[in-house]
Image 1 (tube, helix red, strand yellow):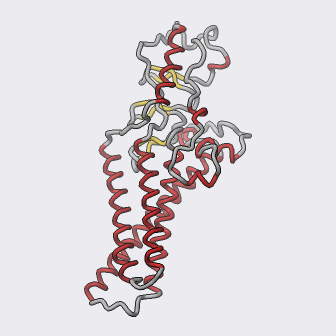
Image 2: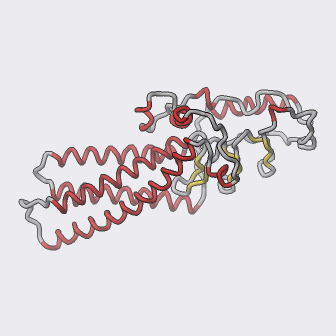
Image 3: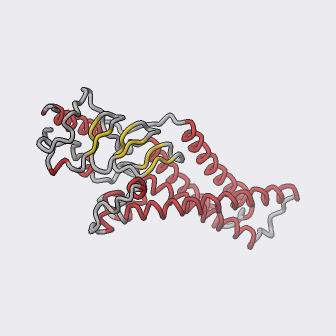
Length: 291
């Protein structure tokens, strides 16, 4: 039988996890490559828009500094949101420091109604709270795990889903902004700009490449973003959808579900990659009762 002291261990371990630096990095080769590709694509878009489109086609326009500042602001917010989604602990269930006896796991005498949604992970050899699932890449159980995303080299879970959603929104905004500036440079070319044929061809080549990149990444990100919004608003993660469990809380208001992910502050602050989550929501101990 699991001793009473073990329940107190979970309480203390979870408390320490919320107080200490919640940084992590998964050493997955595929994920690391995807992260590098992401930053290369963003930096290339910033280079083409700034050097080949704005400075080449709007040298004397007052719109040039505005577009440079606006575009690079989105790039900065995108980078911040992505870094937080990559490095922040998605909600890892702490491991016990002592071996647990699971011999009476199915005993109704020791586990009442309040424990019916708790499950046991045979790989981590520990109890996990409702909606937590084991990730074979992270090799840990993650609270409210949606999926493991190689583009952030991390799981999308309870504590970093907000930043993952922000990252998707900023990528979508950057793609739309890039396409808009490319089309404007084609429809309204700079008549006073004297450039040679080689420079004009280089600008056209970079513009076409960025247009294809923005269209492909934009459509891809929109599909993922719609899936994430559906998972949040209908309170059903991707793992739960595959298992056909249905919504976790059917009658929960949509704004309340969004607030659980994005924070309890004003909705306008939900777009900023800052820590605005209600810490009380995450400081609920993994086990607050004796088992």
